[in-house]
Image: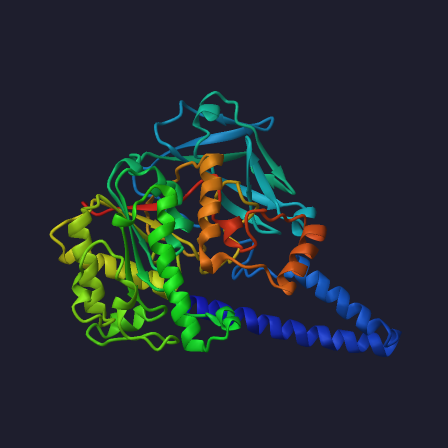
Length: 466
């Protein structure tokens, strides 16, 4: 977790504590003046209201504008909304990634139900109480736009009378040699299953075993270290086998076997070995025996940053990718994700093979744990950017319903995404379904089945040849 997210969490918890103090004072006053029998009733009602409307982790105001600066020269044109239809001010420029910048303002009902924008047969949800600049993803709807046939409607919100359409042109990166960098076993599927399942020359490199937080495996009679080792083996196996569901053979999948949440420490002391926090292991070779090639770290198995960068350099030179898919270091706050991209960039700098493009993804966010908001199968609007990000181009390929189902089934194979939801989460979802109108997919109970299985995938494009 980055320092910024830690600050956001501290501020959120501090505000919550002050609210609880004020609420308890009001509760005591109510009991004193109106009767103590009201206190338990009000407590239950307050808890239900919290679960329905105030349990989301949004570390910014819904009235904040999103700030995006796209590269100089990015095509854009003014659009207007006439009788619920998007009207272009000029012929549509060429480009497959279409982003509509507009103002969204929640209605009174949009403070209690998720406001969303319907764009043709798609919907994209925003924060309850939204009031500000947002970006709707219209990728895949160019034909309807060009024919002035794309309907646009706000539900539980109103839309500005005009907006700006940003058009970004990219090659189809699935037709190039692609290497997906996955800090953990499920990251490749969450971010890029649609991309790599279309690529004829994809390789997938997973950096860590994913062995921590293995308490659930202790039900098998294992102690904490044994449970962590089993989880690490299972997730390492997932990283090598599940990509076959998307057409990537095991000969193009590599598990490096480093340890969860140790990558940042490794980066600060490159020649120091950092073993697992929970499994007791200190040799990455324990999960490397199925790798298709021998790597520099196989010499002694020491979990060091120097070995990690050398492993990645060797893989770049072996698979020779034209495109590397990796976490966005400014947008995705997970410490292993940030360190993974740092290692990739160091490896590229040292390598004799130079990929031309980075495609960057975000499986986690600083500011909003629900993004992408809304139900599975809908589009991906741009995430909150309260502080401007680097001015990167975007690429947002469209996934067919069949590919979305295959992606959901790939996630269902991931050991870390399996298992039934707990009672508290089940009760919260039931309350939100009844009072807030939310829905969850039938494919799996983990939140990633809702967040990751979408009409679009979304990548920030950084050209390395510039």
